[in-house]
Length: 300
Figure 1 (cartoon, helix red, strand yellow):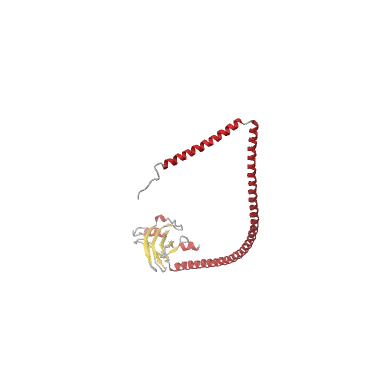
Figure 2 (cartoon, rainbow, N blue to C red; figure 1 turned 90 degrees about the vertical axis):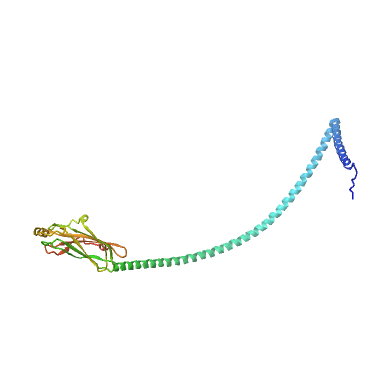
């Protein structure tokens, strides 16, 4: 089936008609402006005043209609606003009533909360009192446990002490002084170290206690009921002559020292000792001082 055109000049004819119509309209408008301009140029002052007055009257009438329309529109808007304000007043009254009810409910809740708070304070006070009693009981229990532990350690610990001192100067024999110590406790004494010193003075004099010249002897561990001897050699093992014996017997022989050790609980202990030979009897007695221990300091 073949396509048939509407005619060889149809499009161009429409375009020519459109251009002709626009040209006529523009020409018509221009002619009207020219006629109006020519009319105004030829009009008399009286006609011009009448024309201006008529135009002003038309514009005044137009603005009067507009002002009236605006006034009517404003009245309608204000009326609607008054109605809404009245309705809002009703709603506000209702809201005020609801707010009052809510305030009363809040007051009731506050009273209930206060009662709960008072009850909670009473409960807290009771709990605090109970906690205080429990803490006091716990403190007493701890004190009792510590006292029991201290008593047990005191009963079970090692106890080192001097048991005897012997040694008399004799002609033809070395002058040796033997110091005996014993552990009278129920557990071993550990890291035992003995210090001893021969410290003579003129008859009736006092010892000087110069520990820097004392002899140390590390004895290690001494078991319960175990004893040890610590021997001093004032003349370095040389046999005494008759003159040496008389010299020793003419002075006061002082023997003193210190003993340190640890118990099985890891606590350190110490004691000091001091003895002197009474005349030429070979019997030693304890001094008035320098016989102390760590337990004596704790007691004092």
